Image 1 (tube, rainbow, N blue to C red):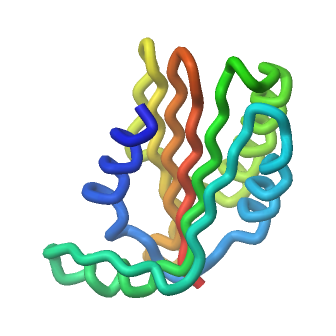
Image 2: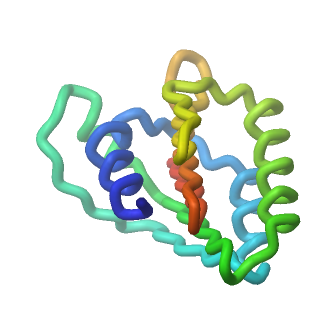
Length: 142
């Protein structure tokens, strides 16, 4: 599930990144990196991606500075910790006015949200949750 979600986000949605890094989101992801069941992967600076795409895609990809991927495994972690993380995340999503692009709730939850400032997308968030794990993929540029 994790690989599929990452591939979908990279191929389909990376072009929508803008020019802002959300300190609240960064703080939340870092806060949970040492909580049992969570694992944080961070890619900072010098991210090189090579895609052929529309007129805006290459500009956005050139601007990406950080990608945060927070994974949660149900076998290793506590449901209460996951619920607390998701509650804090929902507050940020609401406060920062993220807009839903895709929201699928079935056996697996898939949510794709973006945030805009002055008609320019500045942040991208992909949330997946399945039977064994959950993944939170957030990317933004400075």
